[in-house]
Length: 547
Image 1 (tube, helix red, strand yellow):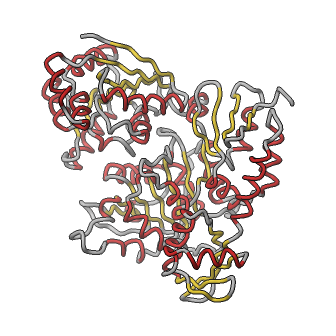
Image 2 (cartoon, helix red, strand yellow; image 1 turned 120 degrees about the vertical axis):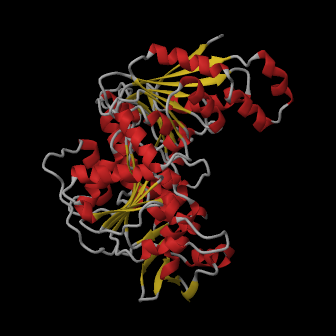
Image 3 (cartoon, one colour; image 1 turned 135 degrees about the vertical axis):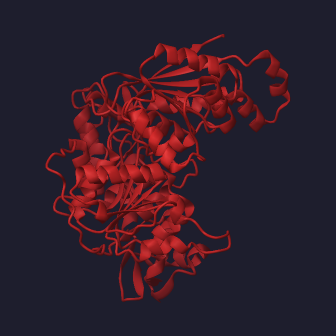
């Protein structure tokens, strides 16, 4: 045993990294390629070895011997034999199913051993996709490439897809001389594309909110030099991408198109919303705008906020396996558990870095999280006691005492740029009437939204009330205080996004307040959010207030 080593590898496949060790950074660089960062509080960071994390590593060129060598180099204790077996077993599985070109209509799936071929033939969910060709090979129609990979990974059969990506129509994308990317943004793109284009060309980059994920996408666009389609969660994010492209590249307005509910401009670089892509006349119809994917001559597709990818877009993405593609997100947490589909269709995680590390380097703001617990007013106690579970949550979330608590917080941070964020429209509207601050919800016209966001960025509006439409992909660099008055049942994904609204680096620290009604359903859900933020390494205080 060597006690000065920073890593403890446990038999349950978790790994504990002592961040105070002098060699912690070097160790982290070695293990992030094959392990997922689960939580990063102040002293010990936890990583997890999983099938997906190991298949990700093997697909990037790492071998099981190299993975084991890195673990032995950093581990305080001798590796458990079960850990060694798990790593070598998963590495061997990755080469069991290989997909290659056959002809213009078919691909060829080669199975390493006949017993695996028998397993595939017996699997009912695969029968319609696989046409036996020999004892160990199957023909697969090209259009089923992505669907096959997605279904097989759910069965624990990762497909080694060796079909090269096609080049789209070329487009020169020059970066402006005045634009200087941050080192981690450059590293993220190298992890995706390699040096000189020898990387996989597809995958997901995970970077904290406020750290410049958009910039990573722009760097990848410049490196690939091809027609690009960018998918965003909302129109505000579309406009933000267009602003960033005009600011950081030499692309002109004639080369960048907006495809949204307001405009339908197809250009060499087109930025659109998930909503417009997934529109259809009725539930029985097909998706007519999927042709935008197929007929654009795209060489690169960017999925902004890939953790929000709608189910229909999974379907069309399954057909687009020959195109360079990039998912961008602050968290790969999906409350529906479809992370494996992001892995198999968009691409595995290629880059990740702890939030606390970028905070320490000054690339995102230092943030403090506060939970303010309030009593339920006496006149609501009986109504709450007899209500059903979902009704109880809403009663607690809309606690009228939250308005007074919010007033106190706003007074404490007078002069700062403040967001009041909530889930329920009636509650937000009551705040607007009481405070007089402007409000943005899903029904606010896009032009009005953009005007209010601009006034907030310019400091002409200091407090803005927003619904969940502002959860993601909104750049409000001066926001330093967020007051969360209600949320979506303890969603970790939502918590990460809302905190991200105040993480842009600035001269002052940021503060994230959550108002919670004590001894109610809301308190229980708040514990999920609290745990998530603590795991990301954020300071978290709890205060009881009796108004």
